[in-house]
Length: 330
Image (tube, rainbow, N blue to C red; front, top):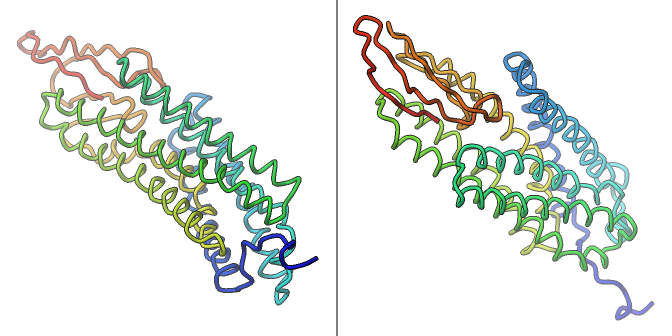
């Protein structure tokens, strides 16, 4: 076969640029797996009575991430141990496990993004926000499906030529995930800021500030990782730099989900001047002030039995018998 007929080589045979990113990504991936195990343990200890659907979501995501950790470890082992000092490995077909990395990342990201889309649908029952929730769901499903289908297609032809042909699909997957994360973060910030502006209690300002910070932290980390993965994948096609964020992307989504759910406990412990119980950060707050008052609060249906609003339509002072205030807390 002449050089003109030879298939293009995408991956350069360099230990620094081809194997190094795999090793770094694998280390970070195992670290985040440990963090996820701790978070799931914390969830089990404090929220074991959550809805069955929420518990299945948590445990299902964890099982997927365990499988993803095994798969990525196999990829690293294949290049750095099994074929050590064999430069021809870079010219052969990729291992079967390498093709499944987008599958797991797309599956986890799609599941978590659909969960956040559901939150937005429940919290903001307006036409605009529900339209946004539908848009987020559509993009989340499409980017996740693209990653899964592309991974399956590569299994039948793992050559570098085929990988080059499928680059547009990988770019759409990463761009779609990046876009959805931005939309989710913007929507949650809007919901929280709106709820804060409508709450007359000054004591709840600190609570909403913590909710807003939590939304920024959990949303920005996946936005940054997906953006970096996309940039490295497009700009550096001859090395494996993009494998570092690709390895950990699924773990970041899972840890973001668990951080959101487990944040309910930290808000309880950190509340001052009252007892604040949250069934989800930014989803349902049940606020009960430790005073000599009796409160008749109506909580309508939501993800965990409430939709994020507590209507204090009757807050009666025990001594005077007069209604003192009416508030909505998100």
